[in-house]
Amino acid sequence: MTGKGGEGTLYGIHAVLGVLKRRPEVIRSIWLAQEARNPRLEEVRSLAQRHRITLKNVNADELDRRAGGERHQDVLALFDPAGIAYSEDELDVLLEQAGPKPLLLVLDGVQDPHNLGACLRTADAAGVDAVIVPRDRAVGITPVVCKVASGAVGHVPFVQVTNLARTLRRLRDAGVWLAGTDMDGGIPLHQADLDRPLALILGAEEKGLRRLTRESCDWLVSIPMAGAVESLNVSVATGVCLFEARRQRLCAGISK
Figure (tube, rainbow, N blue to C red):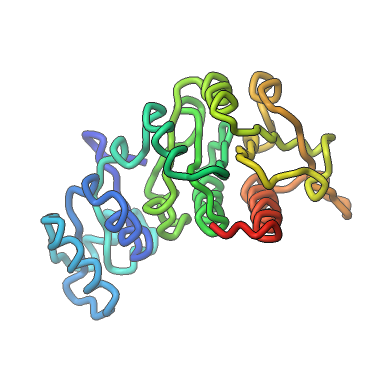
């Protein structure tokens, strides 16, 4: 969540360092526990000083209050949530930077910040070039998302778009194939050709893909299930799909 005036709170060493290294301009100030002795906080202090970001030394009780009970690891940052996300106008630049075979993750309406944070962390580990979400009816970057993502917010471009169906058409026009996930049908994931310019599209918790999103896909893939459970949590499904794409690319000799 964001505070008054659109100010967000980012806590935890990994999360703060991640944003400091990629988008330091969105950080307004960094608060450090004055009694802390963690050597990793010196890296936070050094980067903040390099970017001329205000540093405050406060007691641990003040950090506890600002973090709302979450584990802050003796550091938090106040930041501009609107500035940390990329706009759809920047998507062409991100695609160009990604090279000939971009790997994108599209999340259609994920609303749980823990799920989004886990998806971002997995996306970073799998070498995803950008995560795309709709601006409305979906969670954005919040302190919980940043914490769960463990620094990935600072590494994986997070793009919020006004009209997801229009953005998917734009990706297709740019040569990106669109693979949606469907637990009830579609090509088994391991049989799908994911070694190509690709956007993997996963739906919201419990609801799955919306109709317009589904209709925008070039094909649907499913994760073969062996047990009694009929579906996976969206963050788990994201990991399965992304690392299958990663496996296929590595087997084809492409290392990102």
